[in-house]
Length: 68
Ligand SMILES: [Zn+2]
Image 1 (cartoon, protein in one colour):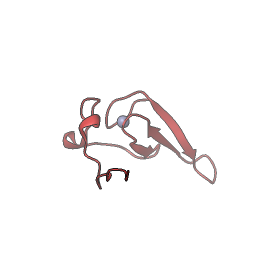
Image 2: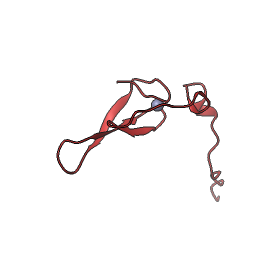
Image 3: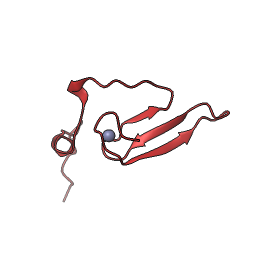
Image 4: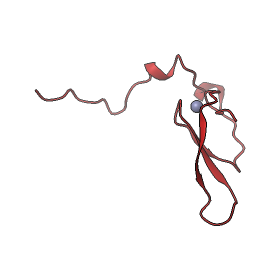
C-alpha cells in the first residue's frame, strides 16, 4: 500500500473499526496523512506532497523560541 498524498510506502494500520471488521484506518508515517480503507481517495494535484516539500512546510502556529 502507498500513501495517496505523498506516494510513500511507509504506511501502517492505525486502528480497526471498533465494531466488526468494517474498515481500517491507515496512517502515512511520512506526511501523517490518514484515511479509512472504505474511502476512495482522490487528492488534488495541488495538495500532493513529496519528500522535498515536507521539510519546507511552515509550522502553524510558529513555535516560539525557548526562554533562557
Ligand atoms: Zn504520505
